[in-house]
Image 1 (cartoon, rainbow, N blue to C red):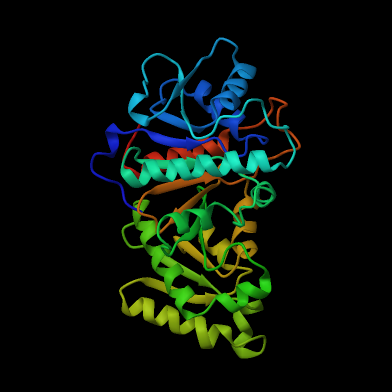
Image 2: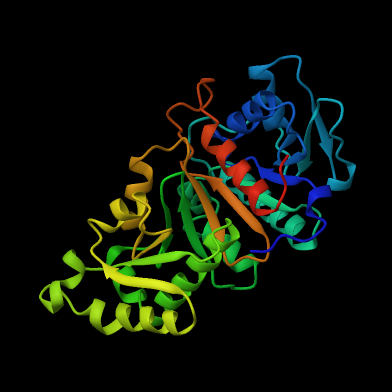
Amino acid sequence: MTAPSSCHTRPLAITMGDPAGIGPEIVARMFLRRPAQRRWIVVGDPLVMRHALAALDPAARVRRIPTSAEARFDDGELNVLVSSEGVSLPPIGRISAESGRAAYAAIIAAIRLAKTGAVRGIVTAPIHKEALAAAGLRYPGHTEILAEQAGGAGVAMMLANEDIRVVLVTTHCSLRDAIRRADQSAQMAAIRLAHAGARALGIERPRVAVAGLNPHAGEGGLFGGEEALIIAPAIAQARREGIDASGPWPGDTVFMQARERRFDVVVAQYHDQGLIPVKYMGLAQGVNITLGLPFVRTSPDHGTAFDIAGRGVADPSSLETAFDYALRLTGAAT
């Protein structure tokens, strides 16, 4: 995750997300709520974004742009770079192949912009995994698409809020597969990325706590041997590399200790072990940061919320937090 030196002069790109969910609405709402911070473009379908913006402010206007170079930021119009164009709106609040294809097209277009340096980073609005599947796109989520498009780079999810930061060893897979995949190589990758990610956020010497896999971190082998056989050797290797890593710590207390500032970042072994503590503290201030990419990518810490899509009540706070983190990670203040 790097921030090129010229990043201050280039916009961020924000994908519209699944057009049937709340993504277009929260993007439009953030645009209206932050008139002083509009140096960014939306990547998506102009028709979808025009509808979302008009529902909130009929006087607001969308500028359809074929390239990021044609964006303007001084006239109050929302710049939408065209990644797809439907002839009608998709069914709101429903899974459809049409929405899955449009959401995917926006992600791919934004990644290309970031890889070529046209934008300084990307913020992604929520997508729906079943809509991707309906479109024949077999990805568990954004992280896997980003990793593939970045050339198979080793990436990890960091979930962060003002209290704790969590990096996952394994992400979107069954618990059975997570246990199998959490080998020493995966441990090392997550620990290194946790260290690098915390440094990117301004922590000079991050204290990295590694959670155990089993109850009570295995209780000396009584509840499982992964801690002694896999996790502890990875921690020892990380320490030899100069990383301030410790553990394995019991998963039922390590997050509380991180919240009390004993640790700067926690490496969690599987998806729910890491995400439950972050999300329990509230979705509005949570953000997902993808570590290990050649560009900055953040996203809100919630899904498409089909149950409220199209009702005009979606809260953009988590998207705004993701936007703020992207600015922070690219070294831009505004």
